[in-house]
Amino acid sequence: MLVNKAYKFRIYPMKEQERQNAKTIGCSRFVFNHFLAKWNDTYQETGKGLTYNACSAQLPHLKEELSWLKEVDSIAIQSSLKNLSDAFSRFFKQQNKAPRFKSKKHPVQSYTTKQTNGNISMEGNQIKLPKLGLVRFAKSREVEGRILNATIRRNPSGKYFISILAETDVQPLEKTESAIGIDLGMTDFAILSDGQKVDNHRFTTKMEKKLKREQKKLSRRAQHAKNNGIDLLDAKNYQKQKRKVARLYEKVMNQRADFLSKLSTDLIQNHDVICIEDLNTKGMLRNHKLAKSIADVSWSSFVSKLTYKAEWYGKTIVKISKWFPSSQICSACGYHDGKKSLEIREWTCPVCHTHHDRDVNASKNILAEGLRMVASA
Ligand SMILES: [Zn+2]
Image (cartoon, rainbow, N blue to C red):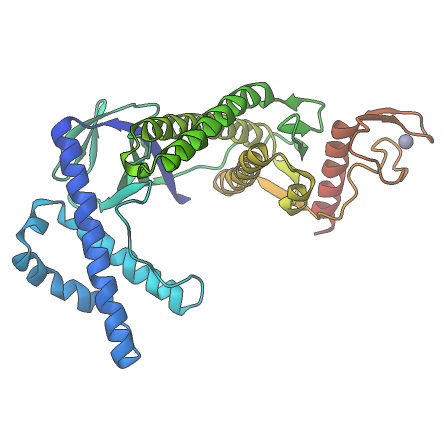
């Protein structure tokens, strides 16, 4: 099966390349905003929008007028225009809000360029990019297949990343004749029906505490600047702290992403059927804000990774209804023991006297329910 795989690497542009990047991002933004304004005007006057082709036909003229547009990757500019027209298509299909002007102040700045005639390629630990030449990158794995496009991003921490989309042929994995149920939790990230608990908590709590502390410091500095009548953009200490928080947050998210990639790959390799709860319910039980936001992002990202990997490698994901009472049923005899408050971590079934770990029991029930659904489908 031909699939699109995304790869993300950190890149290390040299000073000159950083300048060129900034220019390309600036020009892409300019073109986006320029045509957005035209689009809005035309819409107001005629009740109709423009088309990608109509705008694209104006590009050469615009470049003659504003020659600095010629100094950057022309495909990046073209892509920016394409983004705008796609955004309008989605808007007219009522899938999105109307596109808005791009701001220089947005924390993440990026542009996208497309593969044409080998203008993007990997050469050892360097990536060849249009108008930039060779850029060193942190090569953590091989890019397989045909490169379709590349997005260069500058994060608020000042680091650069590249996302490469490549089309590659994947083969189904060998069948293992194994099925597993997963309960997603807060204390442990995932509890498996084979009794295994996947814990990422210790690491995250430590990092989260640190992040929280630094965020508090950031708001103190913002307040301090405000009290002294200093604009935040000119408040050096505030800006310094802001970058520090951004770096820390990035680190937490990157480590999470790695962890989720490995865990989902492991599960897909070792099991043919993976049963998991439908996620929506979980959110209501949490309060701790930062922990919650990270957990929410992690769960949905984990489920989406499992889902596309299952499709690639010929495995099955079964989602269990959020109303299924996975923590109330005895997984040994099926006795329905009623609701249990969250602080009950262990219990003994009054009928068959099996002693249960709450979460492992839940994941066993999720597995049984999933297999029942597969059998009756
Ligand atoms: Zn029982």
